Image (cartoon, rainbow, N blue to C red; front, side):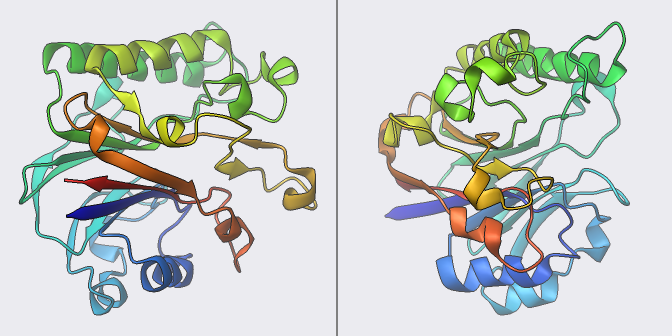
Length: 262
C-alpha cells in the first residue's frame, strides 16, 4: 500500500495551526512530522487535527522552544526519545506504525551564527548532537526505519543557492557536511529526496529576511527524509511543497513529502 509522509518545521504549531490544517486537508499525508513546535505537548491544538482524521499523535515539547510531534491517521506506538548531547531539549521522538515501520523525527540544533565551537557554544552543541546521533545509529543500526526532520544542514552544493558564498555560513560548512555524512553512513541511511530528485537546485527553507523570498530564491535544503537500507527501494516519489512558504503567516520552511510502498 502506498504510504505518504511529510516533514515540516512549523515554527510554532499553535501560531500556525491554520496552515497545518490547510496542509492536512489539502495534501492529506498519512503521517506529518513537525519540528520547532514551541509548545508543551498538552497545549498542541490536537482537536482540529483530529477532526481532519489525524487522531494519533506522539510528541515531545517545551514552552517556547524546540518541540517535535508526529501526527498520524494510522495508529502509532510511542517508542520514546533520546536526549542527544545531553542538552535537555525536546528534539527527538520515535514511533512505530502497525506495519512495523519506525519513524524518527529530529530537530537538530541550528548551531548559531559563527561556525567555530571555541567562540560559539551552540555550534559545538550541534556537532556534539550529530556525533551522538552517529554513535547511536552505529550501535543500533536501524531497520525498516524512516528518519525525517529539520537537520539544519544543506549537504550538497546544489542544496544551497550559492555553494561558494555559503561555505563559511553555518548549515553548509565542510565540518557540518562531514558530520551529516557520518550520521548517514553509520545508520546505512539513504537520502530519499535526492534519490527521487537527483539533479538541480532544491530548497526547503528561505529566510524571513528576504523582502521577496520567492524572487530572491536564496534557499537551502535543511529538511530531510531518509530511509534505512532495507526499505530505501520502497520509496518512489518525493516533492517539496514550495507554495506553502507563501501561505498566510508562513513558516520559513516548506514541507517535504515522500511516498513509499510498504
